Image (cartoon, rainbow, N blue to C red; front, top):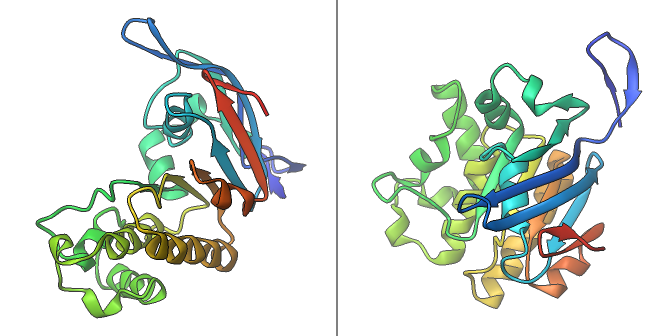
Length: 228
């Protein structure tokens, strides 16, 4: 897709690019990523597969700017992450995150959980949150709490929360991993429909080969590297 660069010229550029991303833990003894190069186009659905511990989640965390790499670079529409004035603002405006464990706050009801990342707050965002909850089939549970919901329902609320700020990119880390097959199928269908209707770019970490086959493209990782 074409975008204006900083000088106002029209350029062709991917939405996400990485070059030689490296990440380690435990004072360098554990290598999570070993020089990952990645290019993701606008609107793509990319499935990231590979065995446990191969670096899939670490890659998502770096793309979401939740962690800093030891080395390498990341770009969003041609703009380097390190050149951004406010990386937290970038994440809030452009990245939606969905996790396997839902991460809903137990003391907040459904509506307030969805509104939690919203900026600005107020009536306008509350209406938007209700609209999102209607789209995920949870508008009848606005005042209920996470403990009162099934796993599939919690994930639908988590998806609505991830979309509250109208992000460009949805990063999903095993979003169906804690669900039964029926709920998993519903959530996957929902994500696919929302991606199409909202024009999202989606990267999903998954161990499910059936889910991976539905993506536009698969990336397989092993030992911190992209191997296919």
